Length: 473
Image (cartoon, rainbow, N blue to C red; front, side, top):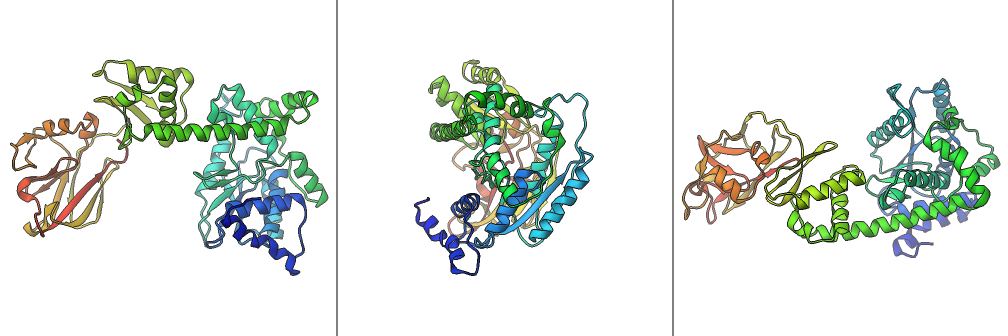
């Protein structure tokens, strides 16, 4: 039982059942789910909205009924989403079944039709049809918007058997600690809940039979060409003959790995605290860490930028090129949608931006989106920025032509813009789409450099502060 004040306060929702207006629910699964929801939902605020991934199979049907029962005593809204992949001849039947069950329980249901590419080169569920179907399913869940409210949490019916299978699959692929941590009951980053991770499939089936629930069976779950089905039907039964509690033990191991992964993330964030600036890493500082800790920081940094972990050999190659190559050597490694680059002993993750000439006019907006994907913010200040009293109602914004000269400091000589950008160590690729702000054909402001000295607001004069926010370095 949770011991925090918040949890004790929220536990009042569970005790309402004892007042006589609602029949007491004593089934262990009901009590476990209610406890999970009270612990993880922010019930002191408005009613959260949960979106259940409903396939129509045993697991999600049981969870649908458990949640429908729970909402009688715990304040939350419940919606369901069924993804119609069209891969089975029974797909329409499953959708109709889900609609009927939701209607009986008065749960709003949305059926999302998706198209899965049936590539004949696909070999297994991790690299083929099953993987794409899973991705489309999650895309539909996380992009769903109800008519009357925003979704606070997506809920899936993954259970203890799923967790054990996931751990074995990750182990067979040579995954690291993060991969072996498998699935989390509460995924804060994605606002995803998996309340049944500690419940065996057998317990779910017993509940369904006891409450006379119907469900759909997906025939593809018997196809052992898929890795997960092979583990489920061929590997796990053999293990259970020797190790009776293998599923719960593997699920517990995944929990240990999750704790270890969390500690590694804490260590990485601490190591990166003095290395990371504007999403770039100081390579000199990184080289002072042990190789193991340097790799840990790199994994954490890539994860922060929503990049999948590279294979071990690839990561070793990246570390070697970052830390051991010549200081002036060029680096340009593609990592999914970003490129890993190096400049002046710092590592950057950059988009592959096309550098097209642009010429825009600012006419008083608070924010201006740039063709490069970044934006300029305009804030009124006092005693700094562009002097508004000079009549700066319109500004011209464009990218570099080359050869520009600029003087932001009255005490220093006019310098080429190239020299000033080198002084602040701006990477060459970022200079290509750096926005320059002109007033009456005079270079008035260069983000990161400053304001032309004769155009600066001083004392109590009103000024215009211009901030450049690049999308990705």
